[in-house]
Structures are given as structure tokens and as C-alpha cells.
Length: 362
Image (cartoon, rainbow, N blue to C red):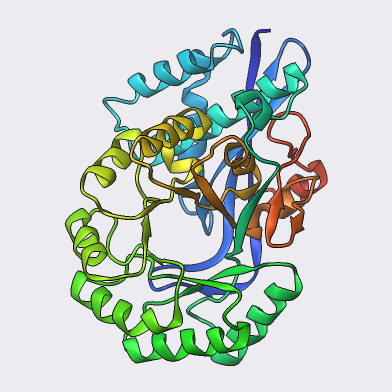
């Protein structure tokens, strides 16, 4: 099976309302949708995204530059294509937009592989489960009032979630404590509550806040300091009893290796886009497993489920609903867990009507 075309489409999906974390203000998610066509007539699909569609065309330009290394290749040679593209990025940089672009192509190639064999990818990789724990991440934003937080937390429970994440990082740490306390009281002690500081604190601030939040039995404190501050991560981890989760802003196995060696966190959070696609995600899982380290995937929920279904040390996936409008298929939650789809490839296909509706033309 030969690859005949590498096609991209740009879309911009508006959020229901503007939202914010301690470091982000978001109105939409812009995506470059990648379709890899084969001479068999099958098409593999993947995507990368930017907040508010900023620099979206830069992503598209990089993806298009991969065409000579993809078109005409044997579609089974996914590892070879990954290596060729990665090595070609040496002069431009092997982090940032370049890796995000590679990730979208790599995921599309794996989707094509699964479709060509008529198997869901988690079974092709070697399945270990049919369902995976998830947590609601599409809410409890820093921009919401306490009344909005508690109402949304209760709505998440009604939807079947048994775990959810609240954002922290207010200028006054006491506000964070008040907000976390309100949500904990609203959901009770049987529902897991996680907190994400979105890299907004320094180490001393994170330790102070973490100690104040420990009474609420948080499942983890996520990205308490800047992604590059591995020493700060390690110090916070040493000083707090609660687990530290991080890694969503690291690139490839090399970034994750540095986090592990620095003892920067208890739970690794690889992001499918930043890590380098499913090829690199699986290598990171093996690396983490050699240290008995758990993984929880960052966003890209639909296309990360096949990874979760074939990775024993993956303990959960983040449920982010932002990209759901792009797909024909819907995710299924059962008793706080997401069902791993048994459809071929990743199990999710782009919705042509939605692509037309959200087409990005700027």
C-alpha cells in the first residue's frame, strides 16, 4: 500500500464561551486536519491545534513541507517515515511547531494502518483493557465564579464523571483555597478532584498553596511551575504529600527522559501533539514503565484512547470536549470510564459537514 497524497484542511472551532487559566485566554481552538491517502482508497486522519487559531498556518506550512518524505512511501514504514522527518527537522528545531506537525502526520499514518488491517489500534498495539478512567477537564476554569464552579461540578457528576479537574493560580492563594473547598463540598469525598496550576507559580508559592490544599485530598497538583523548571518541580514533589503531575509541555522521549531523571513528577502527562504522535507516545510509555511510573494522557482524548487501551501504565485520560464537533463518532462514558472504541484505526473519523462549518479562511 503506497501513500499517494498528504492533504490538510484548516478549521477553527469556537468554544461555548471564552475561558481562562492562569496563563491562557481562549475563545477557540484552530486545527490543521491531516489526511493521508493511500492507493487502496483508504484515508488515515490526524490533527494538530493552536489556541485561538494563532500561528495555525505555520503548522500547515510545516506539514506540507513533509510531503516529499511521505508521498510515494510504503504506508507500513511508519517508523521509517517518523525518523526521516525527525532528522530533517534538526536545523529547524526538534521541539515546538515542528514536532506538532510531525505528530499529526504520524497519527494519520497509524490510523491508516489500522484501517488497512481492519483492526482498532489498541488491539493492533496489544490490548490491555476495554475501558479507561477519565476526568472531566472541560470546565472549572479560573474565569468562573464559585456558583458556576459548583453548578458545573454537579453537572459533570450527572454526566457520569467520577473525577474532575479545577484550575488554580489566582493572584491571592486564599481564593484558590476557597474555590477548591467549594467544589469539594459540592461533589463530596467519593469523587476525585484534581488541580492544575498551569505553570503559573514559583516553587515557594506552589509549596504554600499545596500545603493549604492538602486537606481536600486532591488526586494531584498539575504543572505547579514552568515546564522548564525541573528543579522546582522536584523540590515541590519532595515537600508535598500529594502527587505532582506534569509533562504535557515536554517534547519527545528526550523531554520525558529529562523529567524522569530529575524526579520532577509522580505522573507523566504526555500530549499526543507535543510528544511526537503515537509512534513516540508508545516509546515514552515503555520508558516510563521501566521506572514503574504511571502516565495520564493530555487532551487529544479521541485519538489517545487507542494508546490508553494498549498501555498498562496509563492510569487515565483527560476528557476534553473541544474537538468533539470535528468527529462523526462520540465518546462513551460508563461509570467514570471511557470506552475504548472497537472501530478500525483510532476509531474516530472527521465529519465533513463540521469541517465546512468551521473552515478557517483568514
